[in-house]
Image (cartoon, rainbow over all chains, first blue to last red; front, side, top):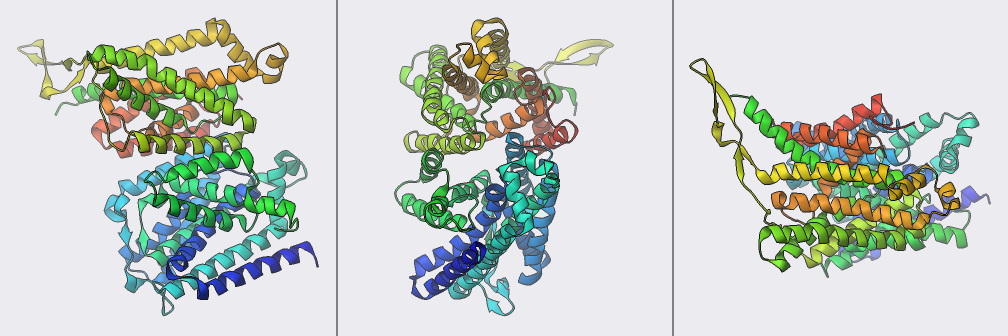
Length: 314
Length: 306
């Protein structure tokens, strides 16, 4: 069996396990896992750019928020139903990531990180500035009656879990397919050695731009799904903290691994959940984790697992 | 209404912002220039400076001027020392790899910020300025064919704000002298140009790095001590100045000290003027978008090399 086939079967098996968990988990963890799967989708989007292409963005919250508000605003102010509103969230993600990618990719390395951070900040401030429509920090609730897609009530826990699993599964398999394709190989080549890739005749800049769009759009879809499934959109999701989170999740799980974002999100979610019951300064855990990770585990959990046990993992 | 007095007011407010921003951004730019490290925790060193200033002033009591002066010396020293320790224990161990240092300094940001929240709490606390006379802004009008001064609408500023501007200019000149006229500055510039050759000539690059990182943090702390009588110390106060310093450093050109100061004055003035006439949020959005334009037309910044 070829390595890529093994990898696909392994991940399908993992998705099957998540499906089975739906029947076994108690209500609290059941709800958490649905949330984690949506957030992990966001992290997988981030991973396309950071893990596979090697571009560190500090502004992905703006893509997440683009999807979230693309969906939420059309729903609340234009009265769109869930289907078209999701499409609006998707398109908002494509547009924002194409535009920001075009501008930010004029820089590279350190400047790219700072510039993405700045754009995300401008986006966050813009959401606050138009508080009349976005309701700023306070955010707005998406009514339960609107959260119905093709006759299925998405506010019901079981439906919500399955919808989150569907989204997560699709994006996971899409990432794996993408990274096993020619396009994905070029992205990985750019990460490993940009100049050599250029010299081999690939359009490095063009590929990077497409990577930003793919990454940003996946983040936006996750944002739109988050608003739809959990019924809330707020400016917090556009703040710097939400740009740092996917970086943290991906690093913890393992950058450049398909399953890393999920594992990282899972661990950090429960770590913060536990510590926030002890202290209000729960972000301390995130800070300590970041420092320890850079010092002792730069490959992340899944990265380490791949190195030791399953070298064929995507 | 007459526009001019408001313009003057906006300019003074803007120059105060510019003064503080220039100090902080020069610290950031110095660290980037010499070490090629983007210090995301820079804003937290700023915050720590303000909080320590409050702590020192609170412990000492006595006349506000003495307490303030003590804070102005002690807070930057402590923050600088802390930064040197962070450099030696964390940044050195990831061998200053650009991405890993960014991640590590993000971690440091949350550690410092949340530890401050746990100890100092979430209240904003003021420090008394050493002196604080009100100065009304004069304007003139034509009375009987001659000029006469008057003081419109109680618009005014304080002597302390003017002193902040003056003190920042002195400090910046001091940094310039340090970098261009002293042996330490020479060593720093040599390390910046070529780390390996500098090491081959017997310069302790590790020590230079620790010192530069400490100096950068100390500058941020000093900026914070200057602003804390105007703004109050709060555990989240490092966030906005950090983003503004990033803007300033990019517009000025990464690693260029002169460019950084020019950009700080530009951003500070536009921030002051737009805040007076419109809203602070709009001022920040415009400052952020200015970065875009600079990047489109001059990717390396105003004074950047390359």
